[in-house]
Amino acid sequence: MVFFAGIIAGVLIAQTKATTADTGLFSEYFLNQYASLSVNIEKLFLYIGGYRISQYLAVVCAGFLPLAPAILTGLLFLTGMLWGTMAGISVIQLGGKGLMICVAGLFPQILFYVPAFGWVILWTSCGGSNRKKYVFLAALGLFFLFFGVACEAALNPGLVRQILRKI
Image (cartoon, rainbow, N blue to C red; front, side, top):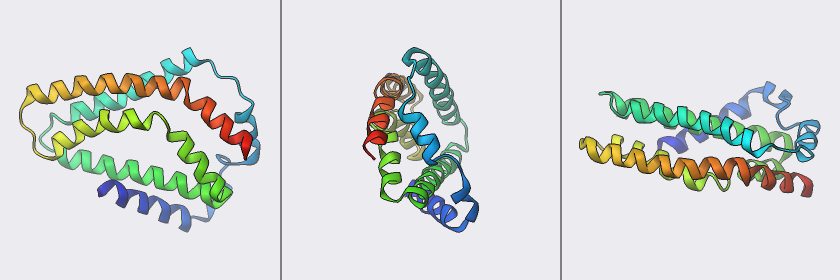
């Protein structure tokens, strides 16, 4: 629920800020450049892997803190707000095509990231106190995180490129 409240807040931010239309993120030039870009999958895997592992470790470590539910609730809200802002800007600039690009940018890796991060966040938010189970969920989440990174590095660029070429 907090995540969706963040999405709504992000969309409202994108709608109220006149400067969002001036961002170059979804400009025709940028999208055309990305559509013809060749990607080094190994380097992208290492880059994304380092980024996602650091995010995941921050969430897992936050789960050990006494204020973990509040911290992770805030994180969910901010993540939703970022997604909402991105979706709002893309729709403002490109209409339905922009939303399709945003959705394509999330798949298929989101199918692995949600369980990886979700189990840890749910366990902490629901007051789970058994540390062995928490560490087990965190280790299982790493397994899902690995496959999410692999999908994001190997499959997602091709999927987004295909969408960009079609629109």
